Length: 225
Image 1 (cartoon, rainbow, N blue to C red):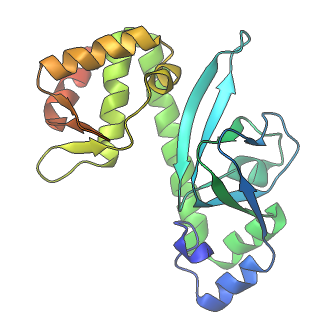
Image 2 (cartoon, rainbow, N blue to C red):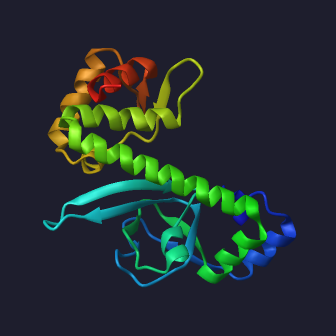
């Protein structure tokens, strides 16, 4: 089962079975919590089926979306490595099957398999870079530009050689708003404007970014790049 995860897929079948024997398998219905911020747990989790969302909350209770983890991804490595309480809450967005690996076993896997440790370091590096970019955007960009930057970020994940990208499923306005600290109304206005510029097209079940390079130029211009 863990052979489909990005972090462990290169392990031999024997090593995978050894890891799986230590794991616990849990199912979560959509909308339920996997763990809360400040929880004193240290397992690392693998998403075998479904999708989860990493979130934090402001003092007023407003949800701030940090990332979505899809099938094949993992989360929880920060607490597994440093032993500190969880830095964010995690919610199941879809009905999900989650595999939990105890932190000691996770540390043993990294020691025995340098390729796994390298992947963990690579993910942590990307998290730092993404956080730095997000902090800069929140500090320097207007709300409409932050929405454009978020659409660009999602488009980059599925960009095709023809310079287009398909974002699927269609992002909910409130989800985009929670990622960039703005309102659903602002998100709706920006998406409408991008559609009028022929940079965005909505189909039955997806958003199609028709010109990723042009959108990137727009975002880079306001970033001063």
